[in-house]
Length: 140
Image (cartoon, rainbow, N blue to C red; front, side, top):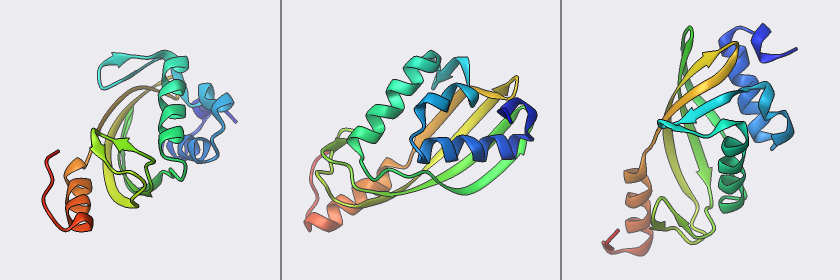
Protein backbone atom coordinates (compact mmCIF):
# COMPACT_ATOMS: atom_id res chain seq x y z
CA UNK A 1 0.00 0.00 0.00
CA UNK A 2 1.40 3.41 -0.95
CA UNK A 3 1.21 6.48 1.28
CA UNK A 4 -1.15 8.08 -1.26
CA UNK A 5 -3.86 5.56 -0.37
CA UNK A 6 -3.52 6.01 3.41
CA UNK A 7 -5.16 8.56 5.73
CA UNK A 8 -2.53 11.21 6.60
CA UNK A 9 -2.01 10.01 10.17
CA UNK A 10 -1.27 6.50 8.88
CA UNK A 11 0.92 7.84 6.06
CA UNK A 12 2.91 9.89 8.56
CA UNK A 13 3.37 6.96 10.93
CA UNK A 14 4.51 4.81 7.99
CA UNK A 15 7.06 7.53 7.15
CA UNK A 16 8.41 7.45 10.72
CA UNK A 17 8.58 3.65 10.55
CA UNK A 18 10.58 3.99 7.32
CA UNK A 19 13.01 6.39 9.01
CA UNK A 20 13.42 4.24 12.11
CA UNK A 21 14.05 1.17 9.94
CA UNK A 22 16.58 3.24 7.96
CA UNK A 23 14.86 1.98 4.82
CA UNK A 24 16.10 4.81 2.62
CA UNK A 25 15.28 2.88 -0.55
CA UNK A 26 11.60 3.21 0.41
CA UNK A 27 11.81 6.93 1.13
CA UNK A 28 10.27 7.88 -2.22
CA UNK A 29 7.03 6.15 -1.20
CA UNK A 30 6.68 8.71 1.61
CA UNK A 31 8.43 11.81 0.30
CA UNK A 32 7.44 13.75 -2.82
CA UNK A 33 10.00 14.16 -5.63
CA UNK A 34 10.00 17.94 -5.06
CA UNK A 35 10.33 17.87 -1.26
CA UNK A 36 11.71 20.94 0.50
CA UNK A 37 13.00 21.36 4.04
CA UNK A 38 12.75 24.75 5.78
CA UNK A 39 12.30 26.43 2.41
CA UNK A 40 15.22 24.70 0.67
CA UNK A 41 14.38 22.41 -2.25
CA UNK A 42 16.12 19.06 -1.74
CA UNK A 43 14.25 16.52 -3.83
CA UNK A 44 14.17 12.93 -2.64
CA UNK A 45 17.92 12.41 -3.19
CA UNK A 46 18.88 15.50 -1.18
CA UNK A 47 16.39 14.65 1.56
CA UNK A 48 17.86 11.16 1.73
CA UNK A 49 21.40 12.57 2.02
CA UNK A 50 20.24 14.85 4.85
CA UNK A 51 18.74 11.90 6.74
CA UNK A 52 21.73 9.62 6.11
CA UNK A 53 24.01 12.32 7.54
CA UNK A 54 21.74 12.63 10.59
CA UNK A 55 21.96 8.87 11.18
CA UNK A 56 25.73 8.92 10.64
CA UNK A 57 26.17 11.79 13.12
CA UNK A 58 23.75 10.19 15.59
CA UNK A 59 24.03 6.38 15.35
CA UNK A 60 21.25 5.73 17.90
CA UNK A 61 18.82 8.22 16.32
CA UNK A 62 15.19 7.18 16.63
CA UNK A 63 12.09 9.24 15.82
CA UNK A 64 9.52 8.93 18.63
CA UNK A 65 6.13 10.50 18.02
CA UNK A 66 4.94 12.51 21.01
CA UNK A 67 2.11 14.57 19.50
CA UNK A 68 0.30 14.41 16.16
CA UNK A 69 -2.27 16.82 14.71
CA UNK A 70 -3.73 16.26 11.25
CA UNK A 71 -5.48 18.98 9.25
CA UNK A 72 -5.30 17.79 5.62
CA UNK A 73 -3.19 18.39 3.66
CA UNK A 74 -1.00 19.24 6.67
CA UNK A 75 0.40 17.31 9.60
CA UNK A 76 1.97 18.81 12.72
CA UNK A 77 4.01 16.69 15.07
CA UNK A 78 6.22 16.89 18.09
CA UNK A 79 8.99 14.33 17.94
CA UNK A 80 11.02 13.22 20.94
CA UNK A 81 14.67 12.20 20.73
CA UNK A 82 16.86 10.50 23.32
CA UNK A 83 20.14 10.01 21.52
CA UNK A 84 23.92 10.28 21.56
CA UNK A 85 25.41 12.53 18.85
CA UNK A 86 29.03 11.60 18.11
CA UNK A 87 30.56 15.07 17.94
CA UNK A 88 29.13 18.47 17.09
CA UNK A 89 25.37 18.74 16.81
CA UNK A 90 23.57 22.02 16.04
CA UNK A 91 26.94 23.76 16.47
CA UNK A 92 27.24 22.38 20.02
CA UNK A 93 30.04 20.12 21.25
CA UNK A 94 27.89 17.20 22.38
CA UNK A 95 30.72 14.67 21.91
CA UNK A 96 28.93 11.46 22.82
CA UNK A 97 26.77 12.80 25.65
CA UNK A 98 23.25 11.34 25.69
CA UNK A 99 20.78 14.18 25.22
CA UNK A 100 17.00 14.47 25.11
CA UNK A 101 15.18 17.09 23.07
CA UNK A 102 12.10 17.69 20.96
CA UNK A 103 11.53 18.75 17.38
CA UNK A 104 8.35 20.52 16.29
CA UNK A 105 7.63 19.76 12.65
CA UNK A 106 4.98 20.78 10.13
CA UNK A 107 4.50 18.81 6.94
CA UNK A 108 2.45 19.48 3.84
CA UNK A 109 1.39 16.47 1.79
CA UNK A 110 0.90 16.43 -1.97
CA UNK A 111 -0.52 13.30 -3.59
CA UNK A 112 -0.20 11.44 -0.27
CA UNK A 113 3.53 12.18 0.14
CA UNK A 114 5.47 14.76 2.12
CA UNK A 115 6.26 17.73 -0.11
CA UNK A 116 7.18 20.46 2.39
CA UNK A 117 8.76 20.21 5.82
CA UNK A 118 9.30 22.99 8.34
CA UNK A 119 11.10 22.00 11.53
CA UNK A 120 12.49 23.59 14.67
CA UNK A 121 14.65 21.67 17.16
CA UNK A 122 14.69 22.65 20.84
CA UNK A 123 18.39 23.54 20.91
CA UNK A 124 18.00 25.28 24.30
CA UNK A 125 17.11 21.92 25.90
CA UNK A 126 20.39 20.46 24.66
CA UNK A 127 22.35 23.50 25.86
CA UNK A 128 20.85 23.12 29.36
CA UNK A 129 21.91 19.47 29.45
CA UNK A 130 25.44 20.30 28.33
CA UNK A 131 25.77 22.98 31.02
CA UNK A 132 24.44 20.59 33.67
CA UNK A 133 26.77 17.79 32.58
CA UNK A 134 29.84 20.03 32.56
CA UNK A 135 28.99 21.85 35.79
CA UNK A 136 29.67 25.32 34.41
CA UNK A 137 28.35 27.58 31.71
CA UNK A 138 30.23 27.24 28.47
CA UNK A 139 29.95 29.53 25.49
CA UNK A 140 27.99 28.13 22.54
